[in-house]
Amino acid sequence: MLLKNYSDRTTEEKESEYPFVECITWADDIKRRGGAWQSSWHYEDNVFIGDNSSLSDLKIKHDYKNISLALPILFTWLKDGAKNPNNLSPNVTRSLIYEKIMKSASNEIEGRSIA
Image (cartoon, rainbow, N blue to C red; front, side, top):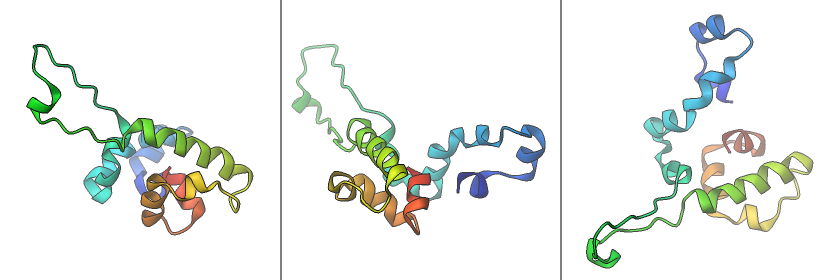
């Protein structure tokens, strides 16, 4: 799916046997095309306060839907899905991560490609 949707003629000519290199920016590219729902899955904000302010005074919101939540689910989904895609763990299929991705995919194989 990535190569089909994000490659172009220039890439195919210049990168020859390495077209996947262009896909490295895919996560950022899809944010601009309606995929911002997965933005926080690529990092975890760790607040550093240099003075005696408290977190509540600064009104900083922590998004729990970050890489610490997404990565273990994605890992399990890709590992187990490769072996037996019809028998995924409920920890995967009931997760916010799986549900969000599958809303953008037409089938399980495409969902794993997005993951």
